[in-house]
Length: 223
Image (cartoon, one colour):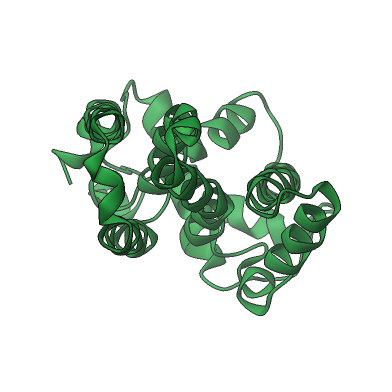
């Protein structure tokens, strides 16, 4: 409580966002768990009078370890929050510009599309508060772009590591976004099912599935 109070009383303040207190508690839970020797942090022990909450089992929090380490270095909760969101905004803009630029085959078109995507209502609604959903949404354009390129032709199959990275980024950020992403990728695969006639496409998608499962099993199994 005292730590969260500094957010609103200190000089490094920001506008209150949706679910903000919950996500700040997640951040503090990881910090406290690391101090207690947990890795990965599954139980946020400082909550509920020391009984703790198993937030680490149910909510992907991989990217929160970076701000948690900044907290351990002595930065205030408000400053860490602002740095995280600043980095996320820049990453979202760059990822969108790259993804849309490849799809549209236009650098300027990719920039415009990225700005439109990252300033739509829901992204602005998430800003500063909905950490998980906003982080996941920064990876979504990369996932759809890589999947589209793989299904298009053999030249696009070189993007399979990017698809693995993007899907992993979503899986490690937000549960509902993960479900939506999997559904959309399956829809894309069904729509472009003729692409699987290529043996190289089947091998590529097999590699993607194997690497995604391998990189995320440590979180999916406890979940």
